[in-house]
Length: 128
Image (cartoon, rainbow, N blue to C red):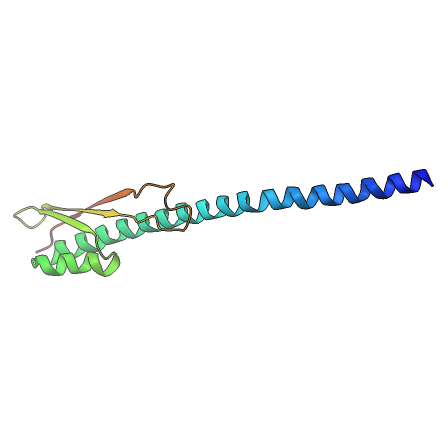
């Protein structure tokens, strides 16, 4: 009977050990997944920053109104800082720079990531 009792005890302790290891591993996995999501949100904001710069450059290439240029960028990315440089003649370059501060706001993880300053440039030729 000694062998049967020893086997039962080792099986119970192994099951308890797995539970404790899982209890320690779950918070680490959750924090890692939240960090992955935060990086994905920053990457999404960078893509939107590039898209806003392209939209503003297209508008600056065909229109002279500064309000329409800023509106094209803020339609894509609200709260962005937009700089426009346009040449005087048709065919000159139009350069648009969009800067945006991506807010890292996920609980627990947002405090670990600083708010990155994202920047994108777009260049087009002036059409009229």
